[in-house]
Length: 432
Ligand code: SF4
Picture 1 (cartoon, rainbow, N blue to C red):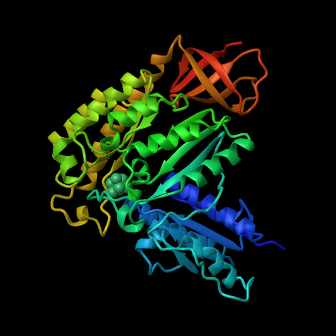
Picture 2 (spheres, rainbow, N blue to C red):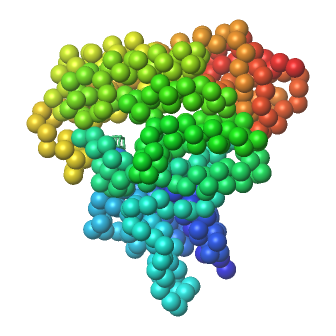
Picture 3 (cartoon, protein in one colour):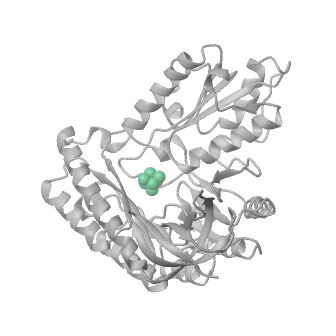
C-alpha cells in the first residue's frame, strides 16, 4: 500500500511552489497525497520565517502535526527550520538549502530503501535546485519559480540568511515547464521568485534579463497571460518597463514592494529607493499600462517610526492609489539588524497604525471597480456558478462575475463589459 502524505504550507508563493515540488518528488516514489491529516503516514509542514508571527505559527503547526497524526513521520522544512535547526517536535528537519535531501531521508526512515542516498548534484544554497516540471495551480493559473535567494539585506528581513544569495533557474528549464503546462491546458502563468528582478544577476545579467525571459515565455503560442510576482521598485528601469510594454501577454498588474512611504524609515530599512523613485516608477508603469493595478506590501511600526513618519506613509499610500495593500505590523526577526534596533514600537501602537493603513487600503480597493464601469475587460474563467454566471480575474486582477447567453467553461477567455460592482467584485455582461 502506498504511503500517504499530508502537506501544510505556510508563507509565500515560493513556499507553495516548493511544496508542490516535494509532492512531485514523493509521488515519483509512490507516495499519495491525502487531504486528511489523520490518515497521513508522513506529515510535512513547509515553514515560514518572514515575521516573528510566522515563526510562532510554524512552531505551533509542528506541534499540532504531532498531536493530529501521532503515528506519522513529522517533517518540518523551509525558512523557519533553516534558522531553527534545533527545533524539537519534528522527526526530519530540512531547511531551504537541503530540501531535496528530504526524499532520501524519508525513504530511509520508512525503510523503503536499504541504501542511504546522497544526491550528487546538490550544491547547498549556491545554485538553483531544479525540480523539473512542478504543477502549482492557483485555479486556472500556474505558478512558475524562476529564481531563489536575495542579496539585498533589508534590515528587517531574514531571507538572505535563510535562503542564501541569488541563483537563477535555467531559461531552458523554465520554458520547458511552461510548454508542458500549456499542453495540460494552462493559459496564465504567474512568474515568481524571492527577488524576481535579480533573475540571472549571478551570471552578470542586468534587469533586462527578466524582460528577455518574459519575451521568450510570451513566444510560446498557447501562453495567453503572464503575471508577475513581487517586484522591487529600484529594478524597474525604463528599459525593463519598455520591454514589459512591448510584451502583449504581460498582465497590467504590478506588485511593487513599498514597505514604507516615509524616506527616513526606508533608509533605516536599507531599502534601495526613496518615495520619489517609487512615484516615478509608478508613473512610468501607468504611462505604459494606463489601467494598471498597483498592489504592495507595507510594514507599520518599524523601530523608531514616529507618528509623523506613519502619517507620511499613509499619505503616500493614498497618493499612489494602490488597488490593495498587504499591511503587516513590524515583527522583529532574530538574526536581522532590526532585531536589536533601539526604539521598538509597542504592540498597541503597531496594531493601531496597521488598522489605520488597512482602512486606507480598504477604501482604495472599494473605489477601484469604478475605474472599470462601462469598459471592456478580458476574463479568464475560473468557476461556473449554479446560476449560470461565471467568475474569474481580468488582466488587471480584479474578480469579475459575468452573465451572458453563451455557454462557458473553466479556462475560457471572455470579453466582458463591466456594468456594476458588488463590493470589490466587478459585475459584467459577456460580449458575444
Ligand atoms: S529585497 Fe529585502 S525584503 Fe525582499 S527578500 Fe531581499 S532582503 Fe528580504
